[in-house]
Image (cartoon, rainbow, N blue to C red):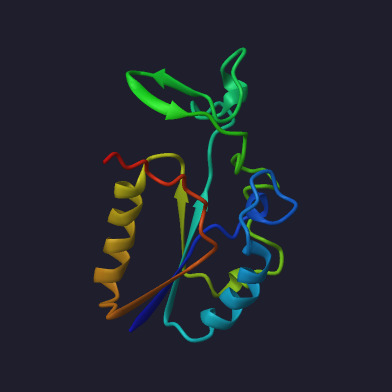
Length: 146
């Protein structure tokens, strides 16, 4: 049994989206081809409430990329994206969603919670091989001190 995990294939990550990721448009074509070769398809869908604490628009006088502390947690503010029930949060219209078996909505709960849901599905279906497909979000390189 094989599984395919799809990520970052929502409208807001496409070239004309709110937070584009390089290669996202082309990745939809690759995803549709890969879907045909897997038994289980899991899609991760970012699905944030409009009042999410990481959106700069929810903090007066703040802009994206500023760092603030909210509830004793440092966060980097971002532009509103993947707001629940919005066009930006929807999967790209060319993505073959009919073949997706599971959609895990990432409502900002963090990677551990998402992995826990994926692990349940993998164990339930006795998955032996997993492929992850989706454009990579750019991350800032960590600074190194010598």
